[in-house]
Image (cartoon, rainbow, N blue to C red; front, side, top):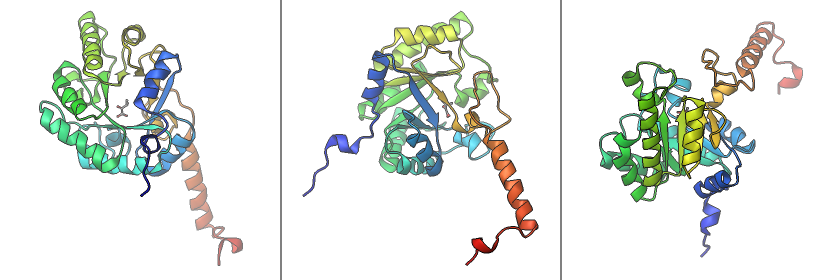
Length: 274
Ligand code: KIV
């Protein structure tokens, strides 16, 4: 009988490797992916962490907020991504309503993600309010990434997508929550849209890596939504977003060219037929 070593079942980037990267000062690069083709390109380009984010609700499904996406939808996206990825750590967002206020439900949701998708870890939003859920998921041996600052699943509580934790009280709570999540055993923490100074302070105080999105340059890593940084989604342009390509225009021009060629009977030509 052939046995598989533990190492051979793990992807090259592990949660332990991320901690080591923080310790030696190597920045962590993380991007979202929601489908097989994009995940394959992103993985082969050398990304460390792929997040199957619930931003799929906006980017893939066209919902205005992240709230409507379901666990089944997230599992579908995550399975497609995992099939493509050989190197990066794959983290999957627990969607709204699958972990808050009920740690048994949280564990069931996380177990479904791990069993059905074979991803490496889950991510959830919140601090003290969800700590029981975090602990219960961790107790089953499932790695958890935290998420503080702007938490899009709480948009109806915040009322805006503006920068969070500008007041001393909110910054103090964020720092307390960051320590709570680290003490509970989270392996990393996303910090979204907070002042750079606060991002630096949290990153210096924690031993686990922080991954920022709009949290300044001192966090241990950075994350962006791939469709935003590639210019596929064009309406969204917050200050923190650097666009590395204008694929929206590239795709639009290519499609326009194809339409012209079909209409003018230029496509297909003799070499493009049997
Ligand atoms: O869902 C998502 O894409 C995220 C990132 C913005 C961190 O949570």
